Length: 264
Image (cartoon, rainbow, N blue to C red; front, side, top):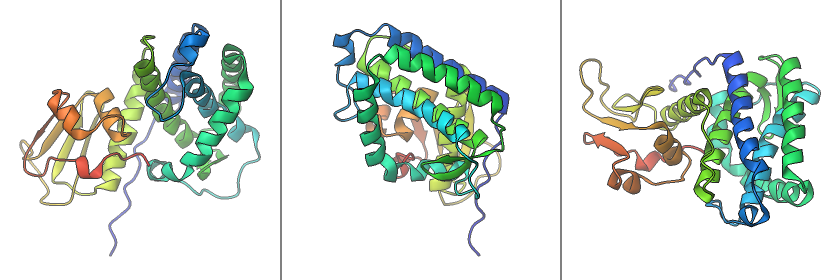
C-alpha cells in the first residue's frame, strides 16, 4: 500500500491575506526609492537585474489578481503541497514573462501602486475556497496565497542581497513561508528519523528511518527562518550554512543536503 499523502496544515485566511499585502507594501516602499543605478544592479538570480526582480515581485501579485478575475476553473488540479515541486518546470516561462514585464512596465512605482489596488479589490471579493486558474492548474485561492508568502519572502531576501535597502520581513509572511517550506521537505523526504526545527515557526519530522517517539530526538537539525528559506530555495547550501554557524545538525542522519532545495 502506498504511503498516505501528507495533509497540508491549516492557515488562517485573514492572516495570510494581511501578510501578503503587508509584505508587498514593504517591497513597494523600497522600490519607490530605487534610482536607475540601483535598478541596474545585478542580483543572485542569474541575469536578472534589480529592475527585473522588482518587476517579478509585482508579477507574483498580479497572478492573484488575474486568477480572481478569470472564470473559476472546473477542477482542482494542484493542492498546496503539490506546489513546491511543480515550480521548476515553469522557470523558463516565468523568466520570459518577467523580462517582458520589466521592459514594458516603465514606471515601477506606478506598477506597484496599481497592483496593490487591484490586489486589495481581488482579496475583498475572492473566497478562500474559490478555485482560481494558475500556472499550476486550478488551485484554491487560499492555498495560492500561501504560496505567495514564499515568493514574497524569498524575493524580498533577494532584493536585500542585491541592495542595501534592508526591506523588512512581515512576521506572519515569514512564518507562513517557513512552514510551507518545512512541510515541503517532509513531502520530499518522508519519514520520522530526523526532526527539523525552525523556531519559532515550524517543527517537522522527515527522512526515512527509525522513528523517534519520546525524549530528545537523536537526529536534529535546527536553524533560523531566513537560513531555512535560503536552504530550501537554493540561495545558500548546506556546507556554507554549517560553516557560518547558521544551522546545527546532530546525529548520523541529520545531513539534509541530499533533499535540498525543496522548491522546484
